[in-house]
Length: 276
Image 1 (cartoon, rainbow, N blue to C red):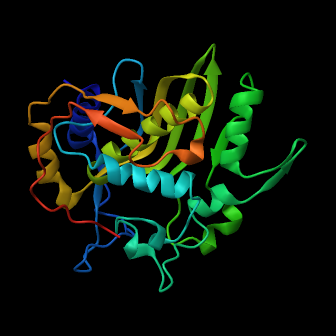
Image 2 (image 1 turned 90 degrees about the vertical axis):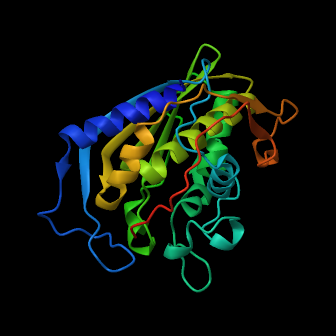
């Protein structure tokens, strides 16, 4: 069984059995027909993934690994906030007529800040510190810029990464204020696990642990039957991650630089409704 499956099943069972419904509260998200999108949630879920043991991808549903990588590179490498730079259409609902999602996600990572060593954006600062000051306890990124929230189409959900080097091992904490468990949990985990692998490789380090901290872990009302079906499936073993060993520059990675070898999974035949 993939450990990512094990944790997802455990999390979802906990939410469904012991979660709190918000049906008595006004909520922002709406379904396509205009109905309020209510959720059942648990507060403060923390999951740990040992990236040395296996790559944390779900097998009880097929994960679109290339599309997840494309979005990750759109944010972290291209530092883009325009959906026209993205191959998938997952952000289209939040984009304006020019394709912009405002001062969100990639925009924040691309803003340069002054340090004593010079001007860096957030990604370049992480890369610099991992190579030149790996003992630092200040290696982190933060997308939740209160000054710019009013110009963001969507407040960042996965908003902060903290990197920590122990010996020659790169560990990271992903902080997420809100997690739609069905549509985003498996997606975000493979994205940031891949990011740790990429940053470790170009910094001469080994990928270690990814700790995922979720403040509001929820399942939408119309997702409950789909989740119940998925978590009843028998998981496959986790696949192996291949990452091109020739890549030594973070900005040289492409979606073809990583692949999952021996990935077996269940299909997800039913279309998942999305609340916006």
